[in-house]
Image 1 (cartoon, rainbow, N blue to C red):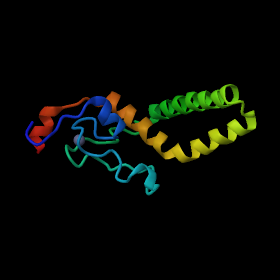
Image 2 (image 1 turned 90 degrees about the vertical axis):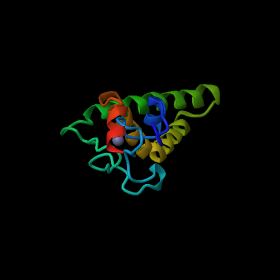
Image 3 (image 1 turned 180 degrees about the horizontal axis):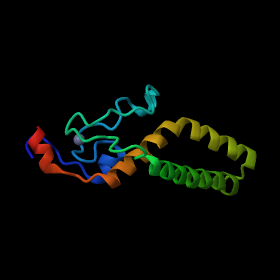
Length: 130
Ligand SMILES: [Zn+2]
């Protein structure tokens, strides 16, 4: 493996790394910099894996973000209302505030999860190109 330290699938996904080599970044900018929040490079700068293998590739990622957002919002709202005795309106405002702050992160993590299911880790290829 040489200089490459092995990253787990989960770590690669959470850190939004290339699923094939687990080295390159899926996004050019930091999530909370809010600079170019939805742009991805065409390909991995480490192994050349295309980040948009086909048109509509990330269609499924929309469902992932929707499900993640839906459940998280619901759990937060229910907790605030039933465990902390908040009003429904107050809980909704908190959910909206959290959604606003984590909107970019959610968009990105959904794409990261999606591409990690679709593209396999390929260590051999990594060694060849390095
Ligand atoms: Zn790569």
